[in-house]
Image 1 (spheres, rainbow, N blue to C red):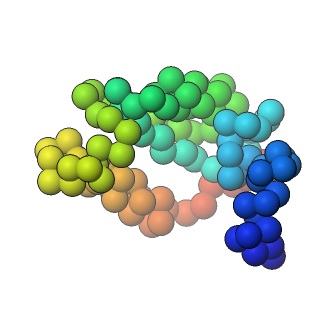
Image 2: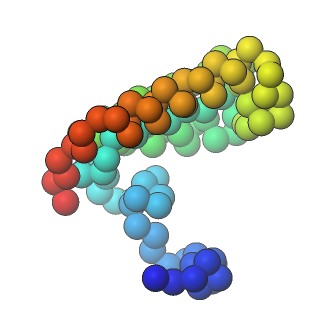
Length: 109
C-alpha cells in the first residue's frame, strides 16, 4: 500500500485516480456503490455535484442527492449550531447508519 506522501505525489503528476476515489473523473460509473451527495444551494461546487449525481443515475447507480436551500460550502462547520447545520449533520448520520446496517449491494464490476 502506498504511503500518504506517495499518493500525494502521484496525484500531483496527474495519474489516473480510480472511480471510488473520484467518480466525477471516471468514464464509466456503472457498478459503483450507492451514493449520497449533498451540497448547499450557494456552494461553488453545486453544479458539479448535481452533474455527478445525474451521471451516477444515468449509469444505474442508486443516488440520494440533496441540495440544501441557502447552504454554503462547509456551512455546517462554520456554524455547527445553526438549524440548517444540525439538519445536515443529522441527515448525514442517518445515511451512515442506514448504509452500515444494510446488506451490501451486489457489484457488477
